[in-house]
Image (cartoon, rainbow, N blue to C red; front, side, top):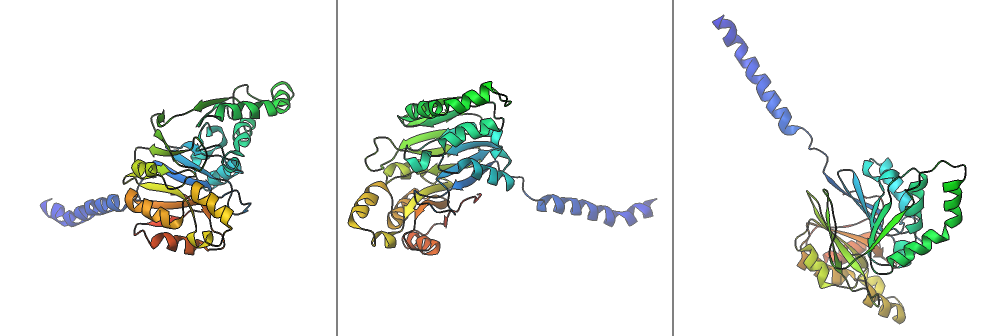
Length: 307
């Protein structure tokens, strides 16, 4: 019996070591937080870049920031890529940085399409002053459609089309078990109210600039954050623009050179470019423009990228 135990000992040790090695090399669990770029576009009608929209998905719960053209179909495309949290019935929370049309043209889509696809909960939306009026006008504009779906032969629920619009000020504007969302004011030309957002989740801190000229508030909100998602235009392309457009863009948006300075001070672990204005420059050239003044990790975002 003693000989038998000694004979088996090497095999037993091997099995134990094997189990330990297996546990050490097992793939990590899925991250709690996903960032999905639903749209990275501008008012330019680029078929490869839909209207501005970002989904922060935490524990399969989505939080949509801005709703440019195509937002719902982009959410559906991301769901097909494996982002379960972007199922239509879950699209119940949204935040809007400002009321420019390229950031809000998809609002009616976000209100009605998920409801038609059986969303039951009302849509909760947070944004600047004017959001309530915009919401009321959109719902009234679709009165005939609502009447047909609510009182005609089509099966429908009586709640999923409703919208609760919350007009915000800087500070904490939303909190649940997954996220704390803080709004901060940014400079966006002559807009009286434009905001960026800071999302604090269990495993990430994400700052979204919205549309803005260089703003100290972005630096303060990030301050070493995990991810900074910032709009940008090409400095090289800008110099080729007509004077009236140079005047406009310098007051409303951030150049690649200015963004490099912002990111150097904000120190994000990852800088993601979105809402890119290329004006003839390539994506690689735009990234290189930022890298001329910034040594951190930077990528140019594309529609349906997932981080």
